Image (cartoon, rainbow, N blue to C red; front, side, top):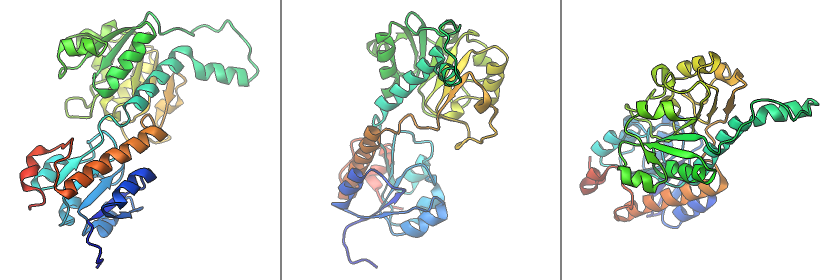
Length: 328
């Protein structure tokens, strides 16, 4: 047993060196390279803090096995891999890094729009194969088109700003943001998804994964889009029903898609969407820039240290836990 009085913090995978250095000042830090729950529990049995990246998931059984646990941190924004009700029952604070990768994800969404509308991949392939034609049909512009944003939070508002600078009309649907605030964020509010979808040339989703948003983009909602529309998703994969999306893309009901996230990750190489020339793909990389990776590490490390000092963090996901932190 260590004689170091500092709390033990276990990292479920490496983080940016600056974030680790911040933790090192006040905690004993151990990096666990085992991505299984059993492997992490073995390393973190006496930990007071665990910082999660992608795998394993932060489950009730994992937290229950770590009897001294006071705080779990999520390296990034999304919380769908953390069992928040269980953490609250077990007296464990949950912190994360909201906004840390918003600029990165918004830029990636814009990139997917531009690559889709400009047919960049097809032009690149054509030229590399000896083509030199300026008469290829299909290359278009975003200026003058209508963008529909579902979810006008930290990412959505940035996308709205980018789109406005390009001369797009921007519509926004977010049932949790008042109309006046939506307008301040650069989007003209609409009252429902059904009102939004028929109007847009490009649809981009920026929502968390909840029971309400799971398969929000499905056969029914895709049918409301114009056949010439483009769909962009940099939020969470299960927001889209990939079977319905594949059908729409192959039957002329949807012109193109740009996807950074997938229903099952990592997605299988057998996923038929990967074979479609009208789809631009990336492997859940939108928020993984040098800048965002550092910001997420610094932000969540700082929040975890506040909890371990006995200070209330700036962003506490489960505030009901605070009066009985560490009590089981």
